[in-house]
Image (cartoon, rainbow, N blue to C red; front, top):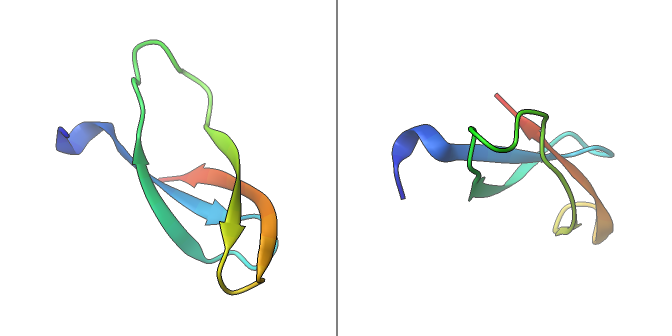
Length: 51
């Protein structure tokens, strides 16, 4: 996985970074938003891409 395609996903509720993933920056221009399980909130919540 190339380094420049790596993105961090931050929980929108507690603001902690819990996931790393990759995306194709040529086809996906907007920020990635996924529903993931947050181990600090202990529930599923939206996770947004950070810098």
